[in-house]
Amino acid sequence: MRIGILSYHFPPEPAFIPGSLAEALAARGHEVRVLTGFPDYPGGHVYPGWRQRWHHETHSERLSVKRVPRLSGGSASTGARMASYLSFAGSASFAARRFLAGVDALYVFQLPATTFAAAAVLRLLGRVPAVLHVQDVWTRDGADEPGEGRWAARMGSAMTRIYRAAARIAVAAPSMRDLVIAAGADPARVRLVLNWTDERIFHPATPGVAARQLVRRDGRCVVMHAGTIGARQGLETAVRAAAALDRTMDLVLVGSGAAERRVRGLAAELGAENVRFVERRSPVDMPELYAAADYQLVMLRDLPELRGTVPGKLQAALSCAAPVIASAGGDTAELVERARAGLSCPPEDWAALADRFWLAATIPPPTRAEMGRRGRAAYLREMSLPAGVDQIERLLHEAAGRVVEPGAIREGISPRTT
Image (cartoon, rainbow, N blue to C red; front, side, top):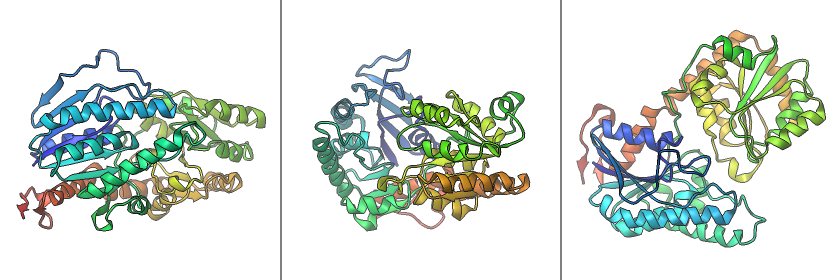
């Protein structure tokens, strides 16, 4: 097939899902064309050595990438984000007519940032069938900001249009299915395709001396949270829970974010000496740090839109065979419990989380290791790169009107066109 990919982010940004999908589809013999922006995530500034310009294309065997200019999305304000989204929509639609001409199907890595561009490109390409891989729905993060309601309405309207226009929709979490159907998607076109992680980095590892020294202070149980310290995570709950068990376990927070100062202040206020902060590390360092800890903590606040969200750190932990403690509702907790890969409790309940921390500390190391092995087995079975590419490839064939025989994807048999 000739496959187009539309993504707001793409490697060298940490966008391993569209990046690895493009490489895998090209390796399977498809011609893949990627339309994206210039790399600026997470800092909001174009990476050193890059310069935004119009005629920027790279080509390798069966894979072409065209980058188009866009305004920086680094500002936290709703207006600045929307300006970035709209500028990408304009640039993408300008380039799409020629660059994506003749594709059999279009894959859209669907974030709120891609919504306006997807709507414009789908309208421009007319009959080209699209597969949306929905990662997030529009959430009113800036609800108190002047004018946010107007942008929310425009975003919602654009999402409804592309949900109705898509030939197939893949959702990254089970409960997200209900959200996209409520927003206008045809239920018969919606499938679950769980995200994978960057398997070149996240796999079982043995911790070195430096990793152990960074993570472990004594023989106590170590629970690690690695990633963003932001509003969605609600790490104040974890700090309060750890403070109640100061002689039983250590909580190590690796990373940074908008809520870091508040979380640090709470730890100091509670005198929680068993809560330690480690600055953001390179992803390549993380498997060793995971292995040096006893559990990985996955936190989400108790918000309706987060019950249908599975944060990427869960797949990373499972792929590394790290047992998990999930303080979350909905899909995240259900995936951990179904895989028997760790412990879970309701979100934003510090007493319940303290109970999970205490129980985790009492579980013998061999039992913890078995949790990790079960989690990795579930990851390989349901969330791995080969499993995800199989499902996306099948949806692309279906969208293009090709009959896929059972087993044809893995065996490399060409589908029949209907």
